[in-house]
Image 1 (cartoon, rainbow, N blue to C red):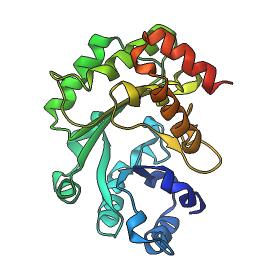
Image 2 (cartoon, helix red, strand yellow; image 1 turned 90 degrees about the vertical axis):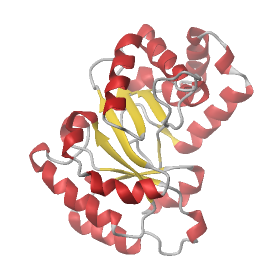
Image 3 (tube, helix red, strand yellow; image 1 turned 135 degrees about the vertical axis):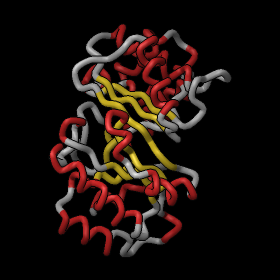
Length: 244
């Protein structure tokens, strides 16, 4: 619970249910708001990630995720989004989305690739699949292995803010790993609606940047108009800051 002391730095929180035991989860639900002013609470993304998608929840126990989500939605946590994987979208009971959608959120469909990334055309094809599943928000987390793949990812981020975008809801596209860490600061200034950093002493996902540093990088990028540069130059500039 200690990292919550830094939570004022965030506009949106992610609650990673799979990181806690059932006993610890119950304690959090009962005490998480102790000593907090209700005005300080931010909207939450509820994420219960399977091992195959980088989480800690055993893949064979996927059904028990539903019970955990029901319990959390019945609590006082300000859950606005439920993060659920595209590959098992049909397993999420739609009734669970009523509460989050009443708060302006809903289904955040996500896709993870821990070994590679995609071409711009492949990203667009995946986006069409998200649309067909009636997602309210979408997220990609890939693993770029080259600067060309990183450029494709950031070009895709730019399409989120285009008037004729295929998808009109909130969207996020980031790359995991050391090479992709700069995407966490660049994607929000190019078109993505949010990004991921970490609170506390260590990252949850490979390539994550601490929230305090991440906010400074985004502000600096905006002040220096990195969004107006060619992507290769913007990447180089951000790499200089991140790895300084």
